[in-house]
Amino acid sequence: MQSSLQFSLVLGTVGRTDELGRMLDSLCRQTHRNFEVILVDQNPGPELDDLRASYDSRIAIRHVRARRGLSRARNVGLRFAGGDIIGFPDDDCWYEPDLLARVAAQLERNPSWSAVTGRAIMPSGEPSSGRWDPRSGLVSRANIWRRAISFSMFFRRDAIRRCRFDESLGVGAGTPWGAGEETDFLLQLLAQGGQIHYDPALTVFHPEWGKGPYTPAIRTKARSYGRGIGRVLRKHNFPLTQVGYHLIRPLGGSVLSWAAWRPDKARYHWAIFAGRTSGWLSSDPPEPDCGTLPSEEDPLAG
Image 1 (cartoon, rainbow, N blue to C red):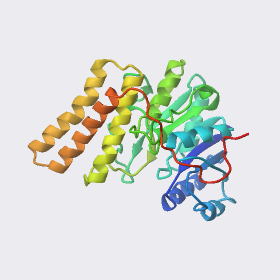
Image 2: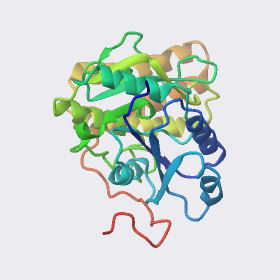
Image 3: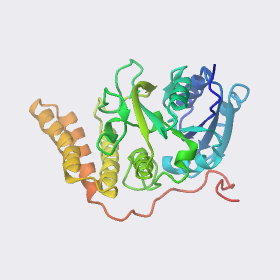
Image 4: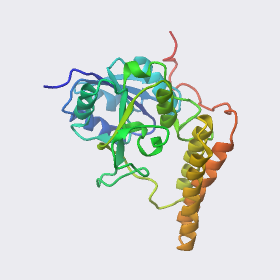
């Protein structure tokens, strides 16, 4: 018997159509059919109108608009999300056909859980986006970095009524801190007493970008993401032992890469180290440069 739980999937997007279409196709194949998509459009014009319209007869999509910034898009989407379970897919990830059914079943069997998280995998099935804990269990401050990524997190809506994404963190925020918003969000929930369960068998497909080639653009991205991680370590007062671990790992990677005469990879690891150090040493948030709304209608008005 299929679960009656409804999902609201808050999907922020900008500058992508093919990848977004792949994600929406994966939703059309879901065995659990009780879901809605809150499509938060951050494009400057009608770039998504034709694509969105092509899915209207297959899945429920609510199209809203927001200023640039992934955290900002998710906060806007939360205002419209009415489902029992809320997820935050990336516009370039995609789901296995039974993912929503499995998430719903886990939350129904475990009413004390506030959320479940999984891990990222590449199209080949290999792990993506960092080091993953092979064991399942509750997420804590000590293991949070190996047990969650934004597009594999699913929350009970009632559990996150007092949580919001920090709009100074994440891609497009207009600040130096290009990542860490999902960890910050989970830490808010943990501080409120929420129970978050990690299951490595819950997987979401996502392209890998940290395995090379290590171009200047990738190094810039790595530094920005590193700054976000460092910022979250400082914001939530992580102990120096954990801060040191997050700094030593990329520094060691840089040294080992130089020893193997892989200068591009060494510079990539150094960018992560430098970014995390800079983020941890940062103080007050700068004024974000989020641009203007892509339409005249402000979705936050009224």
